[in-house]
Image 1: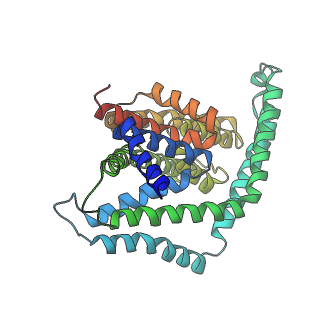
Image 2: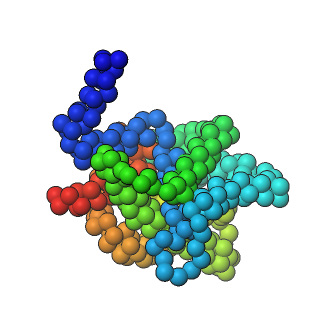
Image 3: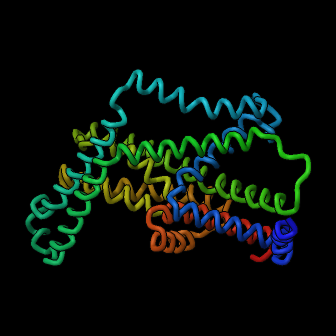
Length: 344
């Protein structure tokens, strides 16, 4: 019993030796790294989303508009995905599985276009292409086909990911719907501050990126479904391309490069002229996007494009795709902490 009490007293003394703020920073960093190592990033993002939506429904920061109690707000966030899935499967059976098949077909279509790129270009231009391009073509075709094959096992992974996201939404909603304790210890207060700063970073960069992705998707839809048909041109898998534009647009910078490449190759599959038109459209649209990005994301987080590219490159090199997605959020959070501490 005496030995147990000594152990119980050793933890607070250890934290006191480190300093409570330092201990909270270490715990927050360990949690962020563990999320990437154990593949829990979708759950973490869902926690943040559930918390923000429930907090918005409660309306603590708003003077006007409807207000809900914390319990009702949390219940609404928890129940909405279940109701939406019920309606989807009752009225649109096979839509989700059909979307996966569409993306598989799109990848195979892009692979075929890359393989036949010399035949689609004018002979004078094709003759000037270097022979080294053949190896790059073969690599890209193999990569696209491997990604299409990987989508065939999407069912189990998608179910696991959906459950993880839903649990994250529930946790975030419950955090927003639970009253804070009447008394806080120093470590709990410090961890609460870390969580507040992380939510601020999430709101700044992720929510802003959502609107940028929506802007890209709407412009792409107008181009594919209105502008090109007026010119008598129809690009295959247009709906799939619009959906891909939105999802990839949630990843800053790199997502835009992916959308540019995919849409341009899809245009080349029709004709080189259509591919060039797609490329010109993307250049114009992303000039507007850079302006929006600078005003919305850059101004809120005080982050330059080279900073985002650097941290995304490091994140992808260490943790793969999860690191690529998490890098802007983690960097914005770290920068928020450094600003609050007066270090930068």
